[in-house]
Image (cartoon, rainbow, N blue to C red; front, side, top):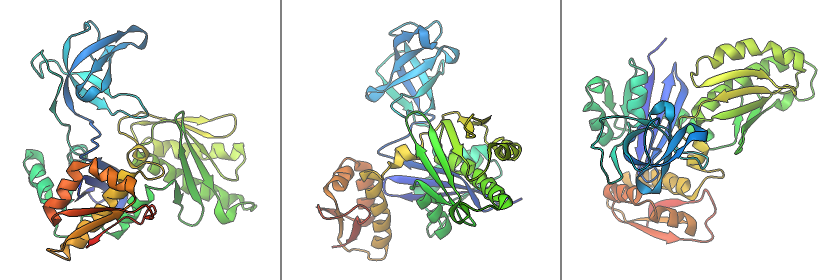
Amino acid sequence: MASPLILASASPGELRTALLVDGELQGAHIEREDDPEGLGDLHLGRLAARAPAMGGAFVALVGGVTGFLPDSEGAKGRSEGEWLPVLVTRTAQGGKGPRLSLRPGAAPPQGPLRLLSPGPEAPARLAAQHPGASVQTDSPALAARLRAMPRLRDRVTLLRGSAFDDAVEEEFAILEQAEVPLPGGGRLSLHPTPALVAIDIDAGGLAGGRDAAAHRALNGRALSEALRQIRLRHLSGAILIDMAGLAIARRQDLLPGLAAEAERDPLLRLLGLTGLGLVELQRRRVHRPLHETLGQPLSPLTRVLAALRRGASAARHAPGAAMELRAAPAVVAALRQAPAALAAFEAAAGPLRLRPDPLCAAGEEDVHAA
C-alpha cells in the first residue's frame, strides 16, 4: 500500500486540499480566507450565560459569535462574566455556534474578546493525522508555512504547475453537485435537510430488472461510495440511505460489509435498518459540511472564486494584460465583500476591473483580458 498523498491547491481567496489514498480521493477540504471555518482557533472569550439544562454555558467570542462550552469541557464551576481561553473543537454549522473546549493558562484572564491564534490549515491537519504522507502544493507561501513546522520540513514539495490534475479537479467538481454517478451505472442523490441527510440510490438501467445478484452488487458499490461521499462532504448528524430494488431481508445481508467499511471513519456509527428498510447512520459533527461552504445551488462567492481561479491561470499566460471580471451583479457584490480574495488576485495579476452584467447566467462568470 502506497503512502497517502496530500495535495494543496491555492487560488485567490481559497485553498483546496485533497487526501489521496492508493490514488483515490479520501479527504477533501475547502478553506476560504474571507469565510474561515475556524476549527482549532484559540479564542479569548467571555462566559455570557450559564445553561444548566444543556449541561454547559454560552461563551461570547470576537465578531459577535457565541459558542457553546460543555460542562465536561470546562464550563463546570465557571461564572458569568469570566474570561476564558477556549478552543474551537467543532465548527459553527446549521445556524448553531461552534463547540468549545477550555484551555486553562493559554491566555491572560482579561479582555478584550479576541482571536489568540488561528487553527492549523487542512494540509497541516492531514499531515498530522497521516505521519507517512507527503505534501505537494502549488503555493510558495503555503510551502514556506508548512516547512516552518519541524515535523513537516522534509515532507513538503513545491510544484511548478497546479497541484490538482484533471482527475482530482473532476472529483471536486462532483462535490459541488447533489448527484454522484456510480461506476457501472446508477447514481447517488444526496439531499441535506435541517433535520437529516437523505441519500437515494438510483439503479439506473437496472431499475425494474429481476437480476437479484446485479441489484445486490449495485447496492454494495453504491453504499461504499455513499460512505466515501459522506466523508468527503463532511456530512453529519442523522443520515438515511434508501437502497434500490432490494427487499428488506436482502438489505440486511449487506449490513455486515457496510459495518466493516463504516469502521474506517471514527466519526461514523451504523445503527442498522429502519422499519422502512432505510440504512440509518449517525456521524459526529466536526467540520462545516461542504454544502454550507459551497451553497446549494452554488453561492455567488463560490462562483466568483471559481472565476478567479480560472482567471489567475489565464493571467499567467497573458502577463501584463489588464484583466476584467464579467459576472452577474450578485457575484460581483460577493467579490467586493471578499477583500482577501480580490487582493490576492490583484497581487498576482494586477488590477481587476469589475463589470456587473445582469444577463450573465450562473456558471458563465469569466475573468479575461480586457
